[in-house]
Image (cartoon, rainbow, N blue to C red):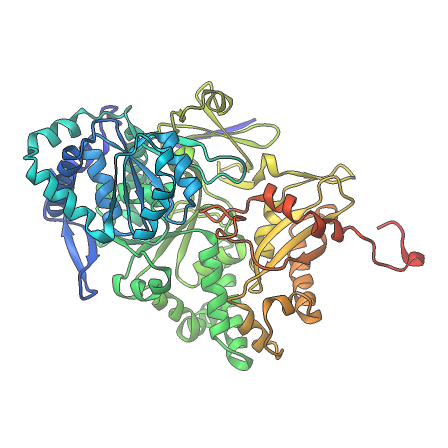
Length: 609
C-alpha cells in the first residue's frame, strides 16, 4: 500500500457555493471579462462579469416564473455554446440543479436520465433534440416544459421573468440559500456497461476544485491574459469544471460548438490553454503529417517530429546539446511553428484527460512548444484528481495528487481517492455508493502505481484486466493506446481472456485512409477493401509490433483483425465521452474474435508457440 497527499493551497469555506463564488468575482472584478461570444457577424464580443451576472439573473427569474423551485432538476441538452453556460449558472442562481444530457443522446437515454433525475424542465438546443424528448414525454410525468435555444429559449425565459415581476431579492435569496453541501448537479456517467449512474456532485465539490486549481495551476489558468476555448461537450464533467474554474481564475471563456469550424475558431479566439482528450492530440498530429504530403516534405515533418521529441526528452536528462538546440531551431522554423499557429498562435498549455496520452505524443507536443499536462480524474471526482504541474512534468504519468487530495494505491494496484471534490453518492443507488465510498475513500476501479515523488501512472481498469489461458494478467490500455496512435487506426479492442495469446480487433480511420494510401503509393480504395489489402495489413502488423515494445512477450499482440466499419457513438459502440463499450464489442464481434484463434497454418507446421 502506497499513499500520498498534496496539501491544500486554500482556506476552504464549507458554506461557499458556485453562486457565492460568482458574487465574490462580481464584487472584485465587475468590469473584467468573463467570456467572449460570437456576434451575428461572427466576431468575438467580450461579456464582462457584470454583464454575465445580469444575464444569469434575468434567466434565473424566468426559471422561477416557470415554476422551478429550489432543488428542482433542469435538463440541459445542447452542444457546447455560450447559452449552455448561461443556463447552467442561471439554474444555480435559482437554486435549481442542472442535469446535463449529451446532445447526441438517444430518446431512450434521454428518458432514463430525465426519469431518474426527476427533471421538471428541459432546455434543448434544436428542434431535433425537442423531438427526441417528445418521443419519451409520456414516460416523464414530472416534465412540465421543453424550451428550445434555437427558438430563443433564453429570450422566452427573460420575458417570462419580467412579466411575472420576479424580483432581484428572490433570486438573491435563492442564491444565498445554497451551501457547499447542497446538490449542484447530477451527471450521468457514460456507462460502458449497463445503465448510466447518476453522480451527485455538490457545490462544495466544484468550489474546492476550482479554488485549488486556481492556486495550484495559476501559471496555466490564472496568469494575466489567460483564455480557453471549450470544444469538449459541457455534458462532460471535465468541460463543466473548466467553466466553473474560470470564475475564480479569471481566465476568459469561449465556446466552439462545431468541430468542423474548430481550427478557424482557434485561430480567431487564440486561447492560451486548452483541454482535450488524447484522441484530439492524435488527430492533430496525424493530420499534420498527412498534410505534409509525400517525399521530401514528409521526411522533413518526420525529422522535425523526432527532433521535437528528442528535445523534450533531453530536458529531463541534463538539457539539449548545442547540436540538438540548433536542429530544434530549424525544425521549429520549418514545421513546428505551424502547429502552434493552427492552435491560434499563443496556446502554451494543454490539459489532457480521459485516457492515457502516451509518451510519444507528450514529448512531441512539448518539443513543439505546447506543454501538455496529462491528468486523471472521473465524474465521481468532479474531474481532475491528479495532474502534472508546470514546474515538474513527468511525461507518461498523470502527475501528483491535485492540491487538497490524497491518493492511495493498494497491493493489487487499485487507485483510491480522498478529498473535498469526491462526490456524495450515486442517485437512487445506495448499494453502488456503498461499494465505492468506504471510510472516506473512493474506490476508483482503476489500476496504477505511485513513484517515489508521488506521481501516478495509470495502467488500466480493474474490470478490464485480461487473464490469458496461461494465467498472465494483461492490462489492455497500454497496447490499445499505443496502437491507436497509428494514422490508419481509429479504434482498438485488445482481447485474450482465457485464450492462448493476446489479439486485437482494429477499425480503420476512414478520414485518414486516403492520405495514407496516397503517401504510400497505393491506389485509392474504401475502408472495406483496405481491411483486406496486404500492404495495409502489413502496416498494421508493424504498428502492433511497435506497440508490443512496451510489454513482455506474454502480453504482446500476436494477431489482429480489422473489423468492417468503425466503432462510433452513432452505432452504439462508443459512449458520448468516446470510450469503447468493451462488453458490447466482445459480444457482437464474437465470431471475429474466434477467427483470431483459428490456426491457419498447414497441419505439419502447427505446434507450440
